[in-house]
Image 1 (cartoon, one colour):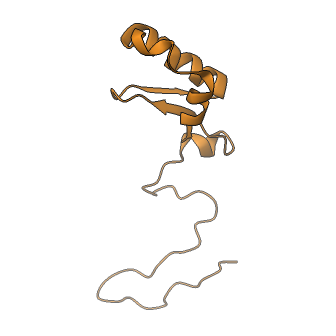
Image 2 (cartoon, rainbow, N blue to C red; image 1 turned 90 degrees about the vertical axis):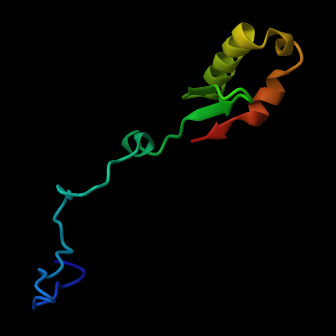
Length: 93
């Protein structure tokens, strides 16, 4: 049974609201996010100052990805940034 009952009359030539969609909203303008499809798991990412975004499923993977980026684009920083620094820069998205 619907939690809300639609209006029984038309208002200004508009159809009454249909609030009980019985499952999926086939005409909805909403798409599930990747996190919702995975059951709530969130990706990890580190955003470099140059704009590069390293993204992966685990801390270890995102640290390795940003290290690869640093090797190729910022080799002078590779030895100055520790693993602990990188772990502190991880965001969940």
